[in-house]
Image (cartoon, rainbow, N blue to C red; front, side, top):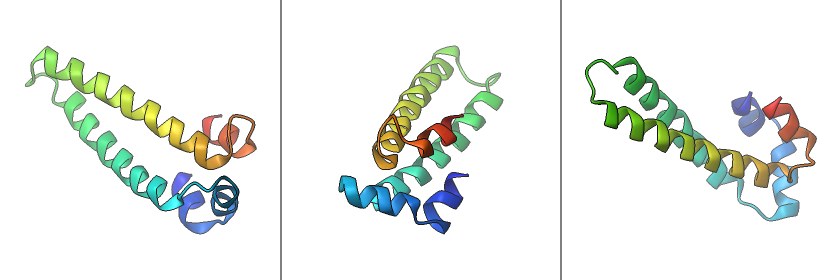
Length: 90
């Protein structure tokens, strides 16, 4: 859903121009977010081979990245009252 909104529609560009938030940064962070999720999936699937403290720190780091991504989406979509953010979270 985010790929379609970032690359195939203009709603995010209209919102970001009014808030003066560069959409390019959020797009590059989106690709970082996807790669971090793939890495985290690998960590969770290989949990028998890894020490528990590695898994614990990986989950903590992923929660931190999730929070940052939610903040970026909140900024780009126009705040907490934006219908686009509610559609993405709902």
